[in-house]
Length: 169
Image 1 (cartoon, helix red, strand yellow):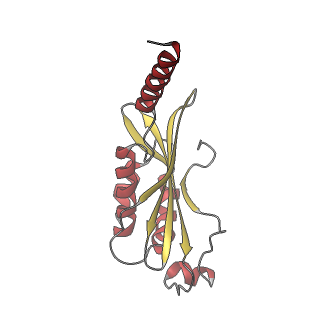
Image 2 (spheres, rainbow, N blue to C red):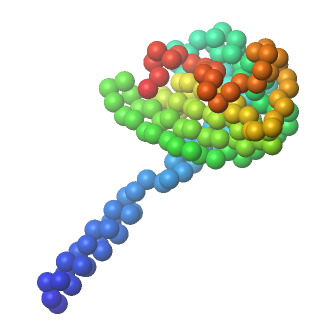
Image 3 (tube, helix red, strand yellow):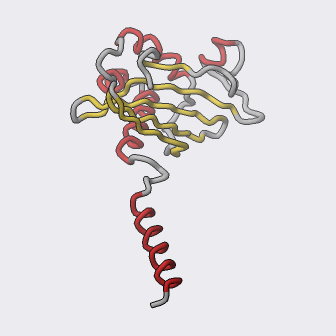
């Protein structure tokens, strides 16, 4: 075998090994399902489900105070299947976190969800849970979120967040 063939074979083998170790573009499927379940719990008004998923050190009263406004950003009806837009995993001296961004496409808006999970023992808990409503052109939003501000939230608005922003990664 010639040297050129050996180099080509070595390069192909290197690329094959690298492709096997690449992370999934859609992220961790278990975290995706947990994020979807959080949105379903929010839409259903299942505050207890959300509270039990929160990480240690999260103020339950602060979480409870934010849920009604967060829910008001969602239109009535079932939550569509979310799509993962990005994820990041970090391990450091403060522990392991996994940040996930998902979008939920409704007829008049796209809800963007950002969840920060923190590893606690063998379980992943929610350290922060953020939502933002991005209304589509021509949408005429209704409900408490639009009424509270006098207008629909805009894509440039700050997201409503749950959790402790001082400890989020």
